[in-house]
Length: 214
Picture 1 (cartoon, rainbow, N blue to C red):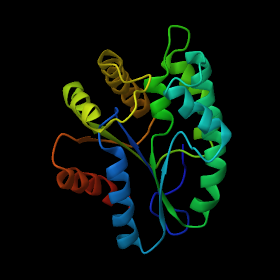
Picture 2 (cartoon, helix red, strand yellow):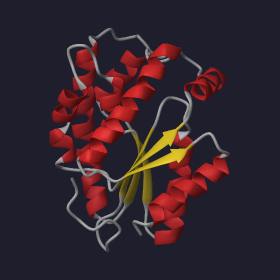
Picture 3 (tube, one colour):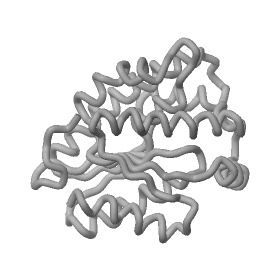
């Protein structure tokens, strides 16, 4: 975990947005970045995982769409490898004073990539080299019902992903609840936001959660 004072002068804030597919993370990450830049007069970057800048992230994204066939456990490990490379990119920016809002981080790994042979606890330990280097100052979970996420996915998806099935998404949302409880017990700062409200209302609720760090 980060042992610094969030929002202190110097190193930037690292804020993570989490949630099921269609919860609005990408839109809200961009809005939060703009608001942080205006409030803090410093650069804010909107990042996402997997990180398509490196070959590992490109393979992961190809696996999402079925063009690369790999075992579910392999996909979980690839997420960790991609994350380590992403941290190598983000840390100097944070140390230089930039804020970063990241669309998915290791909680997604814990919610999406469980298998009968790979538990939530095991995925957490796989990610230890990641969060020991860089942990979130705040994890924001955008909470939307399975029915609403299904409606949004149907309206917005241009290509089918391996996690798109309704039952898969229901399992992911259940897994998220367990993941958030697990992380909260280990001292992570977490804010759960009702993302079924309007885009503006969700943005305001997110800002209220973030304002305590500034």
